[in-house]
Image (cartoon, rainbow, N blue to C red; front, side, top):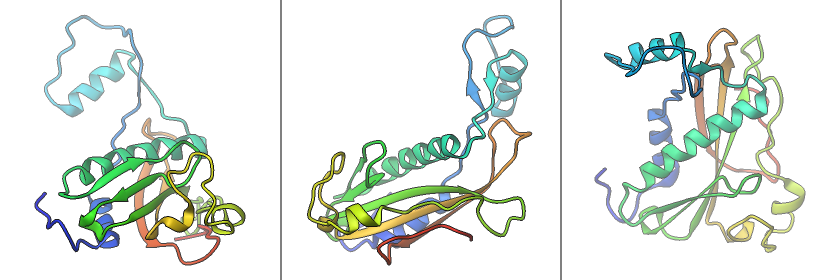
Length: 200
C-alpha cells in the first residue's frame, strides 16, 4: 500500500479500509472429524463442505455480546494488518473491556495518538433499528475525567488527538453457521460525551 508518510486523513482512510472488510468465518473448527485422512479439497467452498460433512464445524454463538466480540476481534486484526502496510504508522490493540479497542499513531496520520472504538449491534427483525443500544464510551469515567490514566488504557482520554467510532450493524441468520449477514460498518468521529447506537 503506497501512502505518503504524512498527511493521510485517518477518518477517510478508516472508511476505505472498512469498505474492504469481509467477515468470513464459516463456523468454529472442531478437532477430530469423521472422515479419511488426508483431507483433500479443490477450493474454499469444497473445503467448507468437506469440513462440515466430516463434523469439523460448529456454529458461531448467536448471543449478541459473544458474536459482537468475534466480529470486533476480526475487524481489529484486519485493521492492524492494514496499518502495518502504511509507512510511519503504528497500530496497537487495546486491552479487553477497556478503551480504545485500537490505538493508531504515527506521522502518516498527522502525529499524536488516535483512539478507535469498535462496537457491533444486531438489527431488529424490522431492520429499521438495532435490537439494543450500544454504549460508545462511558461518559461518567473517561470523558468526565480526561486526565486520569484508567486501568487498561494506554494513556488518558484527553491525550488522544482524535476519537473515532466504527459501528457495525448486522442481521442475525440463525440458519447459517457464520450467523452474520449484511454487515455494514459506519465510521464517525465521536461528537458528544455519550453516544448511543439506536438505529442506522
